Figure 1 (cartoon, helix red, strand yellow):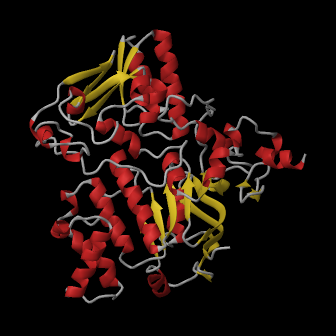
Figure 2 (cartoon, helix red, strand yellow):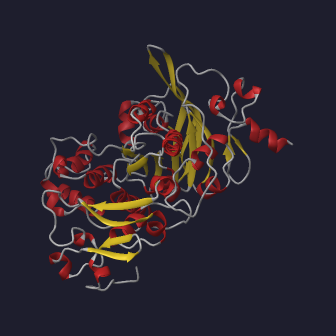
Figure 3 (tube, chains in turn blue, red):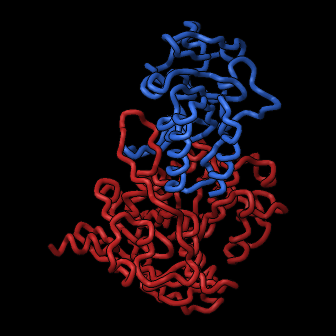
Length: 171
Length: 322
């Protein structure tokens, strides 16, 4: 109910862009479903664009058209929903998918990303993900990856896709 | 049939509030086998944490009996209970508030060993045991003198796990142990809990509101709604063939991180009704799409419908009878 009030306040001036920062994170799933449904309907009705900030890939899959994945202050992968979910490219994105228990497939053990998020006041040199990346090589410590285009609308920041290093296994 | 380790019978826990009696847990029965993980799921305020605390007698039950290894523990006195705590431990949800900020990592892990007189204070045996436990849960040796505030959530939760394991318990209540953690850290902790279970033959009562986590880690799952169990079944069975309308709505409400599965979603009306002095009848009736007259008058009992699948719903019962 409280979140509905907040949504009403946000929509009061008929905005063309709505930024929703973890709008359902504090809610239970059945209530979350109600709020997401409400936001979807309102967005269609008022034709509002939305930036949805969330850590829940399930909500992304159900709500978004395009996805930007952030790590340590940078967007490291940007793609359409289909591209990102069917063909994730960045080792961090792949690690995120490996960390979530799946409802559809049974796995014995999850495949988490090793290590921890870096200290934002003291980011690693080169690619910020290199200390946790299973593909990292020496050059990743020095060279910052630039945006590489995988295909129309799918961009990734990783030296593998600049052709500088080889992936250790097929990504 | 494997050995039974825990049995709860007719557990009730009421809290007195200015507005009336709050029925946090209102008649719950279940049994757990040795080495099993039972997932207890439900939304906030449904009483799942209260059950965990009542089983460990951190809260006294209003009514009902708890059997641990065939021994009725609901009437044990304080002294007998302390002894039992060696076998039954808890991992708390919040790795920030469940650790004493004035104690170092080694002091926190050593505390249960000292309280239970397993090792004498400050000797090399204690130090060795603390290091063994830290190693077991994947905490680096160098953190032995660190304080909780210096560590991140994942490491703090590892301390909580090491502390719970210090007395070599048989049974652990894990109360939302990964809810406060980021997904990549969550996965690390879930793997750790599974490894420890295999290694030490632990039995877990795993309390969570996260349905994908519960499916991943549990052998059996019990679904709670407003103080009562509405359905209990083996994990796969529950996800494949849920029978209770609440379970069905709950499962359909999970956002799935996949774009291939476009599912019909059942959106529930309204919010959870108040647990204070609830009216007779099924607790879910007011939000249920299938509610009949009977649902507002009588309480449905949890009954087995085959395959170890239990459900408390008149609709299912009537379908079975026809």
